[in-house]
Amino acid sequence: MQTMNIEARKLLLIQEFLRIENEEIIIGLEKIVKQLKSRQYESDLEPMSVEQFMEEIDQAMKDSHADNVIKADELRKKWI
Image (cartoon, rainbow, N blue to C red):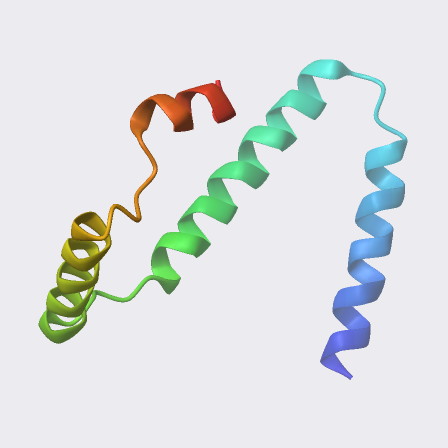
């Protein structure tokens, strides 16, 4: 029952949003949504265990020795 309530509220919010003509309000809403999503993401993060950290370092070292890496220049070309 709670899900239907959320779905109905989302639809009402979308309808209300589509009626907005003022760009400043839209910009403000975009900022608020971005901030809230960022807070939610950060609150969902959990610290990495020392074991997991050490395993990832070991894997990174193996990848480096096997030349299984992407050079920074290649990343720049791809993303910039």
